[in-house]
Image 1: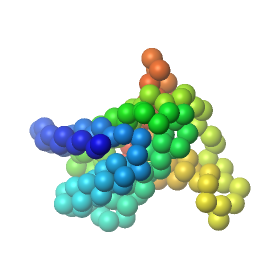
Image 2 (image 1 turned 135 degrees about the vertical axis):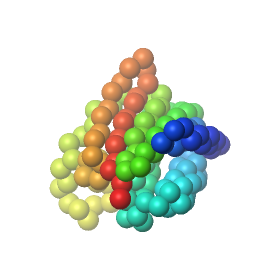
Image 3 (image 1 turned 180 degrees about the vertical axis):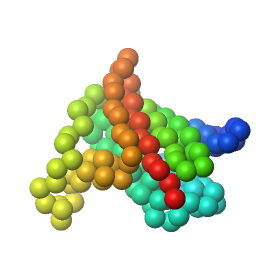
Length: 140
């Protein structure tokens, strides 16, 4: 079940989200983010790129995390012209693949290429059995 807690502090908005390993939760979160970013005045293309990357990252956790009972926590910090995203999960540790695509028409294997192409910064680390993916997007 998806839970969302938005907060506005000084010059930025923070959104905390917790979701189960279910694609419905991921879809609801993306709909919420797209609406929020749109209402904040960001361009549709920027909103689309952010939500596709979030969906891809969460889908990777769901598909490759190795557990059906995982809990995913997200923190979105939205500033005037950029958004920082932290995604935490307790699934299996992984090594992000290189972003080289062998065939763009292939349905699988494009996720990390999209993440690296559409973010301004991306970092992955594993600490205390928790995966932490940090993404930064410059927004227009």
